Image (cartoon, rainbow, N blue to C red; front, side):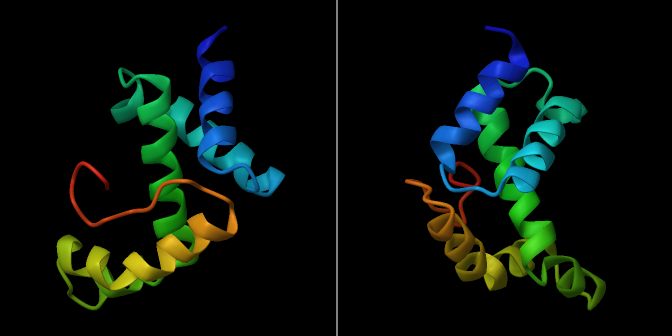
Length: 101
């Protein structure tokens, strides 16, 4: 199994009901991100999924633009992120810690 297949498999497990266009965006981000290049596929998939949801489905970037620090902005969008994860059938949730992203 190549890296793309491994990441795709991990995304399918992490978010079995993710829409296909979101699936492609998350997978492409996991493969194209310099910071995720060395990560194991499962971790790359999770971090890419979380980042995609944060920037696409929440007010995170607006909060940063309004002067909130990243930690505070992440706190304020936590429930919105977990709602998307739930909709997509994810068995995991974001808990606000660095480990749980």
